[in-house]
Length: 469
Image (cartoon, rainbow, N blue to C red; front, side, top):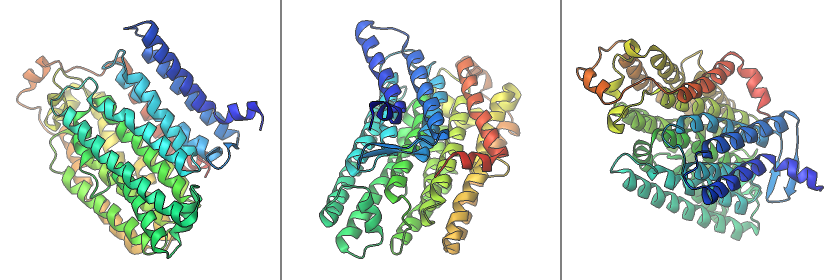
Protein backbone atom coordinates (compact mmCIF):
# COMPACT_ATOMS: atom_id res chain seq x y z
CA UNK A 1 0.00 0.00 0.00
CA UNK A 2 1.42 3.38 -1.02
CA UNK A 3 2.20 6.11 1.46
CA UNK A 4 -0.37 8.34 -0.24
CA UNK A 5 -3.12 5.76 0.28
CA UNK A 6 -2.18 5.32 3.94
CA UNK A 7 -2.11 9.10 4.49
CA UNK A 8 -5.51 9.48 2.84
CA UNK A 9 -7.01 6.71 4.97
CA UNK A 10 -5.63 8.32 8.11
CA UNK A 11 -6.35 11.93 7.09
CA UNK A 12 -8.85 12.80 9.86
CA UNK A 13 -6.54 11.33 12.51
CA UNK A 14 -3.48 13.02 10.97
CA UNK A 15 -5.20 16.41 11.07
CA UNK A 16 -6.22 15.89 14.70
CA UNK A 17 -2.73 14.73 15.64
CA UNK A 18 -1.16 17.73 13.89
CA UNK A 19 -3.48 20.03 15.81
CA UNK A 20 -2.66 18.25 19.06
CA UNK A 21 1.09 18.54 18.51
CA UNK A 22 0.72 22.22 17.66
CA UNK A 23 -1.31 22.80 20.81
CA UNK A 24 1.31 21.10 22.98
CA UNK A 25 4.10 23.00 21.22
CA UNK A 26 2.35 26.32 21.77
CA UNK A 27 1.78 25.48 25.43
CA UNK A 28 5.50 24.77 25.89
CA UNK A 29 6.87 27.63 23.79
CA UNK A 30 4.34 30.36 24.56
CA UNK A 31 2.84 29.97 28.04
CA UNK A 32 -0.55 31.61 28.53
CA UNK A 33 -1.09 31.91 24.80
CA UNK A 34 -4.64 32.33 23.53
CA UNK A 35 -4.40 30.51 20.24
CA UNK A 36 -5.54 27.12 21.53
CA UNK A 37 -9.18 27.68 20.61
CA UNK A 38 -8.40 28.67 17.02
CA UNK A 39 -5.98 25.77 16.50
CA UNK A 40 -8.44 23.25 17.96
CA UNK A 41 -11.37 24.58 15.94
CA UNK A 42 -9.34 24.52 12.73
CA UNK A 43 -8.03 20.99 13.34
CA UNK A 44 -11.43 19.53 14.26
CA UNK A 45 -13.31 21.30 11.46
CA UNK A 46 -10.68 20.23 8.91
CA UNK A 47 -10.82 16.63 10.16
CA UNK A 48 -14.65 16.64 9.94
CA UNK A 49 -14.54 18.04 6.40
CA UNK A 50 -11.91 15.47 5.38
CA UNK A 51 -13.99 12.60 6.80
CA UNK A 52 -17.12 13.83 5.01
CA UNK A 53 -15.21 14.20 1.73
CA UNK A 54 -13.70 10.73 1.96
CA UNK A 55 -17.08 9.22 2.84
CA UNK A 56 -18.74 10.91 -0.16
CA UNK A 57 -15.93 9.66 -2.38
CA UNK A 58 -16.39 6.05 -1.25
CA UNK A 59 -12.79 5.75 -0.05
CA UNK A 60 -11.79 2.41 1.50
CA UNK A 61 -8.46 1.08 2.77
CA UNK A 62 -6.85 -1.08 5.43
CA UNK A 63 -3.58 0.66 6.36
CA UNK A 64 -3.08 -1.75 9.29
CA UNK A 65 -4.72 -5.02 8.22
CA UNK A 66 -6.50 -6.81 11.02
CA UNK A 67 -6.29 -3.80 13.33
CA UNK A 68 -7.50 -0.67 11.53
CA UNK A 69 -9.55 -0.13 8.38
CA UNK A 70 -11.69 2.59 6.86
CA UNK A 71 -14.61 2.75 4.47
CA UNK A 72 -17.47 5.09 3.56
CA UNK A 73 -19.40 4.11 6.70
CA UNK A 74 -16.49 4.68 9.09
CA UNK A 75 -15.69 8.03 7.47
CA UNK A 76 -19.36 9.01 7.80
CA UNK A 77 -19.30 8.10 11.51
CA UNK A 78 -16.12 10.15 12.02
CA UNK A 79 -17.68 13.10 10.22
CA UNK A 80 -20.70 12.94 12.54
CA UNK A 81 -18.62 12.80 15.72
CA UNK A 82 -16.18 15.51 14.66
CA UNK A 83 -19.01 17.76 13.45
CA UNK A 84 -20.69 17.45 16.86
CA UNK A 85 -17.43 18.58 18.49
CA UNK A 86 -17.35 21.88 16.54
CA UNK A 87 -20.30 23.55 18.39
CA UNK A 88 -18.90 22.15 21.65
CA UNK A 89 -15.66 24.03 20.96
CA UNK A 90 -17.58 27.23 20.22
CA UNK A 91 -19.49 26.80 23.46
CA UNK A 92 -16.25 26.22 25.39
CA UNK A 93 -14.52 29.41 24.25
CA UNK A 94 -16.14 31.57 26.93
CA UNK A 95 -15.21 29.26 29.80
CA UNK A 96 -11.83 28.05 28.55
CA UNK A 97 -9.88 30.85 26.85
CA UNK A 98 -6.78 28.64 26.92
CA UNK A 99 -5.08 25.96 28.97
CA UNK A 100 -5.29 22.18 28.85
CA UNK A 101 -8.95 21.92 27.84
CA UNK A 102 -8.26 21.96 24.11
CA UNK A 103 -5.43 19.38 23.98
CA UNK A 104 -7.50 17.08 26.17
CA UNK A 105 -10.57 17.38 23.97
CA UNK A 106 -8.60 16.82 20.75
CA UNK A 107 -6.92 13.78 22.33
CA UNK A 108 -10.31 12.36 23.24
CA UNK A 109 -11.57 12.94 19.68
CA UNK A 110 -8.54 11.09 18.35
CA UNK A 111 -9.56 8.15 20.51
CA UNK A 112 -13.10 8.24 19.11
CA UNK A 113 -11.72 8.10 15.56
CA UNK A 114 -9.61 5.05 16.47
CA UNK A 115 -12.67 3.33 17.94
CA UNK A 116 -14.69 3.86 14.76
CA UNK A 117 -12.05 2.14 12.61
CA UNK A 118 -10.98 -0.60 15.03
CA UNK A 119 -10.77 -4.16 13.68
CA UNK A 120 -9.11 -5.74 16.72
CA UNK A 121 -9.63 -5.67 20.45
CA UNK A 122 -6.20 -4.05 20.83
CA UNK A 123 -7.13 -1.05 18.69
CA UNK A 124 -10.59 -0.85 20.23
CA UNK A 125 -9.23 -0.81 23.77
CA UNK A 126 -6.62 1.81 22.87
CA UNK A 127 -9.29 4.00 21.28
CA UNK A 128 -11.77 3.67 24.15
CA UNK A 129 -9.15 4.54 26.75
CA UNK A 130 -7.77 7.44 24.71
CA UNK A 131 -11.33 8.71 24.41
CA UNK A 132 -12.17 8.28 28.11
CA UNK A 133 -9.06 9.25 30.09
CA UNK A 134 -9.02 12.95 29.04
CA UNK A 135 -12.70 13.24 30.02
CA UNK A 136 -11.88 12.35 33.65
CA UNK A 137 -9.73 15.48 33.73
CA UNK A 138 -12.24 17.58 31.80
CA UNK A 139 -14.88 16.96 34.48
CA UNK A 140 -12.78 18.69 37.15
CA UNK A 141 -11.19 21.27 34.85
CA UNK A 142 -12.29 24.80 35.79
CA UNK A 143 -14.74 23.23 38.23
CA UNK A 144 -17.32 25.51 39.79
CA UNK A 145 -18.78 23.07 42.31
CA UNK A 146 -17.31 21.38 45.35
CA UNK A 147 -18.62 18.01 44.21
CA UNK A 148 -16.73 18.07 40.90
CA UNK A 149 -13.75 16.13 42.28
CA UNK A 150 -16.04 13.49 43.79
CA UNK A 151 -17.95 13.13 40.51
CA UNK A 152 -14.74 12.79 38.49
CA UNK A 153 -13.43 10.17 40.93
CA UNK A 154 -16.67 8.19 40.67
CA UNK A 155 -16.48 8.38 36.89
CA UNK A 156 -12.82 7.32 36.96
CA UNK A 157 -13.36 4.34 39.26
CA UNK A 158 -16.46 3.01 37.50
CA UNK A 159 -15.00 3.59 34.05
CA UNK A 160 -11.85 1.80 35.18
CA UNK A 161 -14.04 -1.05 36.35
CA UNK A 162 -15.61 -1.13 32.88
CA UNK A 163 -12.16 -1.31 31.30
CA UNK A 164 -11.16 -4.20 33.55
CA UNK A 165 -14.42 -6.00 32.77
CA UNK A 166 -13.82 -5.46 29.07
CA UNK A 167 -10.32 -6.92 29.25
CA UNK A 168 -11.56 -9.93 31.21
CA UNK A 169 -14.21 -10.56 28.56
CA UNK A 170 -11.64 -10.18 25.78
CA UNK A 171 -9.34 -12.68 27.51
CA UNK A 172 -12.15 -15.24 27.55
CA UNK A 173 -12.95 -14.63 23.89
CA UNK A 174 -9.26 -14.91 23.02
CA UNK A 175 -8.96 -18.11 25.03
CA UNK A 176 -11.84 -19.64 23.08
CA UNK A 177 -10.96 -18.39 19.59
CA UNK A 178 -7.22 -17.74 19.67
CA UNK A 179 -7.82 -14.42 17.93
CA UNK A 180 -7.97 -10.75 18.98
CA UNK A 181 -9.96 -9.78 15.89
CA UNK A 182 -13.35 -8.21 16.55
CA UNK A 183 -14.84 -10.96 14.41
CA UNK A 184 -14.28 -13.26 17.41
CA UNK A 185 -17.07 -11.36 19.18
CA UNK A 186 -19.45 -11.75 16.24
CA UNK A 187 -18.66 -15.47 16.10
CA UNK A 188 -19.24 -15.84 19.83
CA UNK A 189 -22.70 -14.26 19.50
CA UNK A 190 -24.01 -17.43 17.91
CA UNK A 191 -21.98 -19.84 20.02
CA UNK A 192 -23.38 -22.05 22.78
CA UNK A 193 -19.98 -22.39 24.40
CA UNK A 194 -19.97 -21.21 28.02
CA UNK A 195 -16.59 -19.48 27.67
CA UNK A 196 -17.70 -17.56 24.58
CA UNK A 197 -21.02 -16.57 26.17
CA UNK A 198 -19.29 -15.34 29.33
CA UNK A 199 -16.89 -13.28 27.23
CA UNK A 200 -19.72 -11.67 25.29
CA UNK A 201 -21.65 -10.83 28.48
CA UNK A 202 -18.60 -9.29 30.13
CA UNK A 203 -17.73 -7.17 27.10
CA UNK A 204 -21.32 -6.01 26.78
CA UNK A 205 -21.48 -5.20 30.50
CA UNK A 206 -18.40 -3.03 30.11
CA UNK A 207 -20.06 -0.99 27.39
CA UNK A 208 -23.32 -0.83 29.33
CA UNK A 209 -21.31 0.85 32.09
CA UNK A 210 -19.54 3.19 29.66
CA UNK A 211 -22.89 4.16 28.12
CA UNK A 212 -24.66 4.50 31.53
CA UNK A 213 -27.25 1.77 30.99
CA UNK A 214 -29.23 0.75 34.10
CA UNK A 215 -28.03 -0.63 36.52
CA UNK A 216 -24.57 0.69 35.55
CA UNK A 217 -25.69 4.31 35.34
CA UNK A 218 -24.94 5.83 38.73
CA UNK A 219 -21.88 7.82 37.64
CA UNK A 220 -23.66 9.77 34.89
CA UNK A 221 -25.95 12.16 36.86
CA UNK A 222 -23.11 13.26 39.16
CA UNK A 223 -20.58 13.66 36.33
CA UNK A 224 -22.97 15.56 34.05
CA UNK A 225 -24.05 17.89 36.84
CA UNK A 226 -20.59 18.58 38.25
CA UNK A 227 -18.84 19.22 34.93
CA UNK A 228 -18.93 22.60 33.21
CA UNK A 229 -21.55 23.11 30.49
CA UNK A 230 -19.22 22.46 27.50
CA UNK A 231 -17.89 19.27 29.09
CA UNK A 232 -21.41 18.03 29.79
CA UNK A 233 -22.27 18.69 26.14
CA UNK A 234 -19.18 16.78 25.05
CA UNK A 235 -19.96 13.78 27.24
CA UNK A 236 -23.61 13.67 26.22
CA UNK A 237 -22.96 13.99 22.48
CA UNK A 238 -19.46 12.81 21.56
CA UNK A 239 -18.45 10.34 24.28
CA UNK A 240 -21.84 8.64 24.07
CA UNK A 241 -21.39 8.37 20.30
CA UNK A 242 -17.91 6.89 20.72
CA UNK A 243 -19.20 4.15 23.02
CA UNK A 244 -22.04 3.21 20.66
CA UNK A 245 -19.73 3.16 17.65
CA UNK A 246 -17.48 0.79 19.59
CA UNK A 247 -20.44 -1.55 20.10
CA UNK A 248 -21.28 -1.23 16.40
CA UNK A 249 -17.77 -2.42 15.53
CA UNK A 250 -18.23 -5.39 17.83
CA UNK A 251 -21.53 -6.52 16.36
CA UNK A 252 -20.69 -5.69 12.74
CA UNK A 253 -23.50 -7.33 10.76
CA UNK A 254 -24.01 -10.28 13.11
CA UNK A 255 -27.58 -10.70 14.39
CA UNK A 256 -28.14 -11.14 18.11
CA UNK A 257 -29.69 -14.46 19.18
CA UNK A 258 -31.30 -15.68 22.37
CA UNK A 259 -30.49 -15.57 25.24
CA UNK A 260 -28.37 -12.52 24.36
CA UNK A 261 -31.43 -10.84 22.85
CA UNK A 262 -33.10 -10.80 26.27
CA UNK A 263 -30.04 -9.15 27.84
CA UNK A 264 -29.96 -6.57 25.03
CA UNK A 265 -33.66 -5.88 25.53
CA UNK A 266 -34.33 -6.03 29.26
CA UNK A 267 -31.48 -3.84 30.54
CA UNK A 268 -32.00 -1.13 27.89
CA UNK A 269 -35.74 -1.31 28.61
CA UNK A 270 -35.03 -0.80 32.31
CA UNK A 271 -32.77 2.09 31.30
CA UNK A 272 -35.57 3.72 29.31
CA UNK A 273 -38.09 3.38 32.11
CA UNK A 274 -35.82 4.37 35.00
CA UNK A 275 -34.14 7.20 33.09
CA UNK A 276 -37.49 8.75 32.19
CA UNK A 277 -39.02 8.25 35.64
CA UNK A 278 -35.98 9.61 37.51
CA UNK A 279 -35.77 12.63 35.20
CA UNK A 280 -39.24 13.70 36.37
CA UNK A 281 -37.91 14.47 39.86
CA UNK A 282 -34.84 16.48 38.86
CA UNK A 283 -34.46 20.16 39.66
CA UNK A 284 -31.29 20.76 37.63
CA UNK A 285 -31.07 20.84 33.84
CA UNK A 286 -27.78 18.96 33.53
CA UNK A 287 -28.96 16.24 35.88
CA UNK A 288 -32.16 15.99 33.83
CA UNK A 289 -30.05 15.64 30.68
CA UNK A 290 -28.07 12.90 32.40
CA UNK A 291 -31.18 10.85 33.10
CA UNK A 292 -32.41 11.61 29.59
CA UNK A 293 -29.06 10.27 28.36
CA UNK A 294 -29.61 7.09 30.38
CA UNK A 295 -32.98 6.60 28.70
CA UNK A 296 -31.57 7.31 25.24
CA UNK A 297 -28.80 4.78 25.83
CA UNK A 298 -31.60 2.23 26.15
CA UNK A 299 -33.10 3.28 22.83
CA UNK A 300 -29.71 3.05 21.14
CA UNK A 301 -28.95 -0.44 22.43
CA UNK A 302 -32.37 -1.52 21.21
CA UNK A 303 -30.99 -1.11 17.69
CA UNK A 304 -28.82 -4.20 18.22
CA UNK A 305 -31.90 -6.40 18.48
CA UNK A 306 -32.40 -5.97 14.76
CA UNK A 307 -30.51 -7.50 11.87
CA UNK A 308 -27.20 -6.06 10.78
CA UNK A 309 -27.86 -4.27 7.46
CA UNK A 310 -29.98 -1.40 8.83
CA UNK A 311 -28.24 -1.16 12.19
CA UNK A 312 -25.45 1.24 11.26
CA UNK A 313 -27.74 3.82 9.68
CA UNK A 314 -30.21 3.65 12.57
CA UNK A 315 -27.56 4.13 15.26
CA UNK A 316 -25.60 6.81 13.39
CA UNK A 317 -28.72 8.79 12.54
CA UNK A 318 -29.88 8.54 16.15
CA UNK A 319 -26.50 9.69 17.50
CA UNK A 320 -26.48 12.64 15.10
CA UNK A 321 -30.00 13.79 16.02
CA UNK A 322 -29.50 13.13 19.74
CA UNK A 323 -26.09 14.81 19.87
CA UNK A 324 -27.24 17.94 18.04
CA UNK A 325 -30.17 18.42 20.41
CA UNK A 326 -28.11 17.95 23.56
CA UNK A 327 -25.52 20.49 22.43
CA UNK A 328 -28.32 22.85 21.32
CA UNK A 329 -30.06 22.94 24.70
CA UNK A 330 -26.79 23.58 26.55
CA UNK A 331 -25.61 26.20 24.05
CA UNK A 332 -28.90 28.10 24.39
CA UNK A 333 -28.85 28.02 28.20
CA UNK A 334 -28.42 31.64 29.38
CA UNK A 335 -25.16 32.27 31.25
CA UNK A 336 -25.01 33.28 34.90
CA UNK A 337 -22.38 34.06 37.48
CA UNK A 338 -23.42 31.18 39.74
CA UNK A 339 -23.18 27.74 38.12
CA UNK A 340 -25.69 26.20 40.53
CA UNK A 341 -28.24 28.94 39.86
CA UNK A 342 -27.68 28.68 36.12
CA UNK A 343 -28.47 24.98 36.19
CA UNK A 344 -31.76 25.15 38.08
CA UNK A 345 -34.90 24.42 36.09
CA UNK A 346 -36.78 27.05 38.08
CA UNK A 347 -34.61 29.65 36.36
CA UNK A 348 -36.16 28.71 33.01
CA UNK A 349 -39.60 29.93 34.13
CA UNK A 350 -40.72 32.78 31.92
CA UNK A 351 -37.57 32.61 29.80
CA UNK A 352 -39.60 33.29 26.65
CA UNK A 353 -40.49 36.73 28.04
CA UNK A 354 -36.83 37.56 28.65
CA UNK A 355 -34.97 35.74 25.88
CA UNK A 356 -37.31 34.40 23.19
CA UNK A 357 -34.56 32.93 21.00
CA UNK A 358 -33.04 30.92 23.85
CA UNK A 359 -36.49 29.67 24.86
CA UNK A 360 -37.30 28.53 21.32
CA UNK A 361 -33.98 26.70 20.94
CA UNK A 362 -34.42 24.83 24.22
CA UNK A 363 -38.00 23.99 23.26
CA UNK A 364 -36.91 22.57 19.88
CA UNK A 365 -34.31 20.43 21.61
CA UNK A 366 -36.79 19.13 24.18
CA UNK A 367 -39.43 18.26 21.57
CA UNK A 368 -36.85 16.41 19.48
CA UNK A 369 -35.47 14.48 22.45
CA UNK A 370 -39.04 13.53 23.33
CA UNK A 371 -39.42 12.04 19.85
CA UNK A 372 -42.31 14.24 18.73
CA UNK A 373 -42.81 14.63 14.96
CA UNK A 374 -41.66 16.33 12.79
CA UNK A 375 -38.47 16.81 14.79
CA UNK A 376 -35.43 14.62 14.02
CA UNK A 377 -35.71 12.67 17.25
CA UNK A 378 -38.95 11.15 15.98
CA UNK A 379 -37.27 9.81 12.84
CA UNK A 380 -34.38 8.46 14.92
CA UNK A 381 -36.69 6.51 17.24
CA UNK A 382 -38.76 5.33 14.30
CA UNK A 383 -35.69 3.80 12.65
CA UNK A 384 -34.72 1.95 15.83
CA UNK A 385 -38.16 0.52 16.57
CA UNK A 386 -38.71 -0.30 12.90
CA UNK A 387 -35.60 -2.49 13.00
CA UNK A 388 -36.77 -4.18 16.20
CA UNK A 389 -40.15 -5.05 14.69
CA UNK A 390 -38.56 -6.20 11.43
CA UNK A 391 -36.26 -8.52 13.42
CA UNK A 392 -39.30 -10.27 14.90
CA UNK A 393 -39.50 -8.73 18.39
CA UNK A 394 -42.79 -6.78 18.37
CA UNK A 395 -43.32 -7.26 22.12
CA UNK A 396 -40.01 -5.59 22.94
CA UNK A 397 -40.82 -2.83 20.46
CA UNK A 398 -44.18 -2.13 22.14
CA UNK A 399 -42.60 -2.15 25.60
CA UNK A 400 -39.90 0.24 24.38
CA UNK A 401 -42.51 2.60 22.94
CA UNK A 402 -44.41 2.59 26.23
CA UNK A 403 -41.17 3.33 28.06
CA UNK A 404 -40.43 6.21 25.69
CA UNK A 405 -43.83 7.82 26.38
CA UNK A 406 -42.84 8.21 30.02
CA UNK A 407 -40.31 10.81 28.91
CA UNK A 408 -42.94 13.14 27.50
CA UNK A 409 -43.76 14.50 30.94
CA UNK A 410 -40.41 15.99 31.88
CA UNK A 411 -39.59 17.26 28.38
CA UNK A 412 -42.95 19.03 28.21
CA UNK A 413 -42.50 20.31 31.77
CA UNK A 414 -39.42 22.21 30.60
CA UNK A 415 -41.44 23.72 27.74
CA UNK A 416 -44.20 24.65 30.18
CA UNK A 417 -41.59 26.47 32.29
CA UNK A 418 -40.28 28.32 29.24
CA UNK A 419 -43.56 29.59 27.83
CA UNK A 420 -46.36 29.27 30.38
CA UNK A 421 -44.93 29.67 33.87
CA UNK A 422 -44.55 33.13 35.39
CA UNK A 423 -41.01 34.32 36.08
CA UNK A 424 -39.63 33.22 39.46
CA UNK A 425 -40.00 35.70 42.34
CA UNK A 426 -36.23 36.07 42.52
CA UNK A 427 -36.02 37.39 38.97
CA UNK A 428 -34.21 40.55 40.02
CA UNK A 429 -31.70 38.54 42.05
CA UNK A 430 -31.14 36.26 39.10
CA UNK A 431 -30.38 39.22 36.87
CA UNK A 432 -27.98 40.55 39.46
CA UNK A 433 -26.15 37.22 39.45
CA UNK A 434 -25.13 37.90 35.86
CA UNK A 435 -27.88 36.39 33.71
CA UNK A 436 -27.50 37.51 30.15
CA UNK A 437 -27.99 36.43 26.58
CA UNK A 438 -25.73 33.67 25.23
CA UNK A 439 -22.47 34.93 23.75
CA UNK A 440 -22.00 35.28 20.01
CA UNK A 441 -20.03 32.03 19.88
CA UNK A 442 -22.75 30.25 21.84
CA UNK A 443 -25.31 31.62 19.38
CA UNK A 444 -23.14 30.35 16.53
CA UNK A 445 -23.13 26.96 18.24
CA UNK A 446 -26.94 26.97 18.35
CA UNK A 447 -27.06 27.77 14.63
CA UNK A 448 -24.60 24.97 13.85
CA UNK A 449 -26.90 22.58 15.71
CA UNK A 450 -30.20 23.95 14.40
CA UNK A 451 -29.42 23.98 10.67
CA UNK A 452 -28.39 20.29 10.44
CA UNK A 453 -31.37 19.39 12.62
CA UNK A 454 -33.71 21.09 10.13
CA UNK A 455 -31.96 19.28 7.28
CA UNK A 456 -32.31 15.83 8.82
CA UNK A 457 -35.93 16.53 9.81
CA UNK A 458 -36.91 17.60 6.28
CA UNK A 459 -34.77 15.12 4.32
CA UNK A 460 -34.15 12.11 6.57
CA UNK A 461 -33.92 9.68 3.65
CA UNK A 462 -31.21 11.74 1.97
CA UNK A 463 -29.21 11.93 5.21
CA UNK A 464 -29.54 8.19 5.83
CA UNK A 465 -28.28 7.47 2.31
CA UNK A 466 -25.24 9.67 2.98
CA UNK A 467 -24.42 7.68 6.13
CA UNK A 468 -23.49 4.57 4.15
CA UNK A 469 -23.57 1.36 6.11
